[in-house]
Length: 288
Image 1: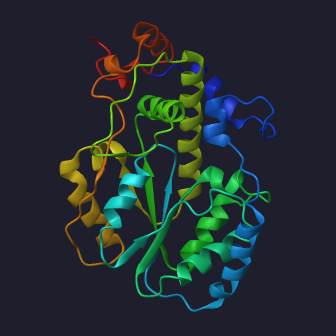
Image 2: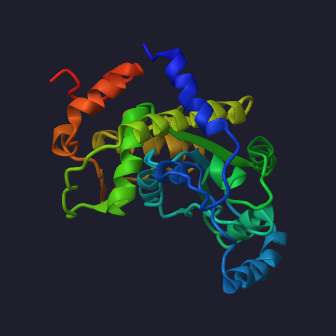
């Protein structure tokens, strides 16, 4: 059982008013709740030129994937994007844009002949925009325009937090099949607890935003971690989008090491820390 008091305090860290960029936030805080400056002039010009496209009639089916960092969204994008009738866009709101809804509409208008979708994280709307966007209203706006909603989450917050810390340490967020193995690292246990708290807070908020909205729910552990489940997962997605099923493949592979012992130098300290907050059971080989 997770210690309610400890995790409540960890989640409270995530709910406190955000500091301004560069005001001493830790690396995980920046990863989960960072803020990006408005794009360069040429990016603003590009955005302005695309606005007229938002006035075009909608084309094929559209969808949005609500997710959080290190949940397998890029793997899902690679798999679903293997469908010849689908263009799965990137995280298009991970920087400040002048008019987020017009920006989304203009991106959709570029792909009139295919199903189009994009992924979005809560912080894309609440932190990366100079004028914060209410996530519930934003999703409702998409649903009103016939967007199908997919929710992808990761149940194991410990491995998710470790994945964020690994990506920031190595700069490797996605890996091809022939990439090298991660180096061994010392884990900052205080930062690990904070990261777990942030993710638990995100889980709560995502469920609040999705209340009352019809959506397809996916989890990394059940639907993506095992490659033998990829086809069945994509079949569910294609059914949700009312598209024909097709075979899918990807050249992406997991970035985590085969064993926590291969990565974590201070494994005993990490185990003790996770035991103190009731999350040791989420660490593989915790009893070894």
